[in-house]
Image (cartoon, rainbow, N blue to C red):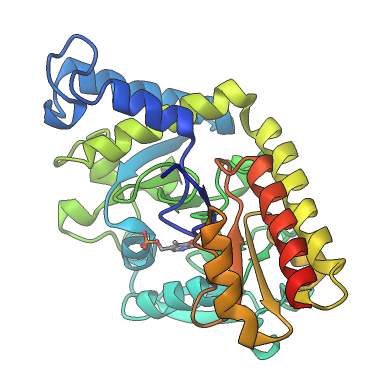
Length: 363
Ligand SMILES: *Cc1c(COP(=O)(O)O)cnc(C)c1O
């Protein structure tokens, strides 16, 4: 057996170099004579891991000093609830723009804690595009505006943040499936959060970038474990963090820097995405992607076969060819290829070659 090209939407493929490094130091980390999984999160060695990972992420995304970086647990989903608990006060409203299922879930989890205004939704078009920002019904004085710039299930991406009216609410963005895939202007966001298991590392970790003035809002929950301000004051070491996931995330950040940073990632990701979309669009309708061209995700590419009766054969044959986890999300059906940072161009080329061959044999 050998490692295949893993197109899973998450937990997702990691850079082989990072896994090899983790393997090499799994039993003994540095001079610790113990695994990184076995040492105290209060040790000097782990303090170094924490400090270096934050510094590397700050360098990669040019994160300004007036933003805190947190390494927490509970996944992106826990933040769906903690965001309104921390950022909204009694009687506040928060705006949500829905471009797919994750935004729907974020809004549903927020409802017990804040007045949720669905400022725009693409549900009527089955989430195949981004509603025109000019039509977003934003609430004056909203606590925040929540966006899911890349919808992992539908494969819909806001490739740029839209221009918004002056004085708009802080933007809170779920970047779980797109962080580090391209440069970001952090100063345009109030809060960025990302579950690790797509572009950052193993599951169990969520990375947050929070403008410091938002840490202490009137509505913050009383339990310290739920308060962003307390996590920030304790450098994300209020309780035991997911140390191994954090360590591996740090290794991924170093790998991204070695590759040339997020600009290099963006160039590679654009090329991978255009390779696959060109193959789909050039298949004469054998394969199709339903998303508006201008909103097609670079990271998650859903596609269906014109003849769904061939799905089973496609999945079995692709897996036998070492192309893993191509089954689409159950709500969309068909196939989905996730092309995160760690997926090499060679993986996409192999997928496209397989798709052509499959079409020739079954078309
Ligand atoms: C994967 C994903 C989530 C869910 O992450 P969990 O770690 O399972 O909570 C949320 N939002 C987006 C955009 C995702 O891709």
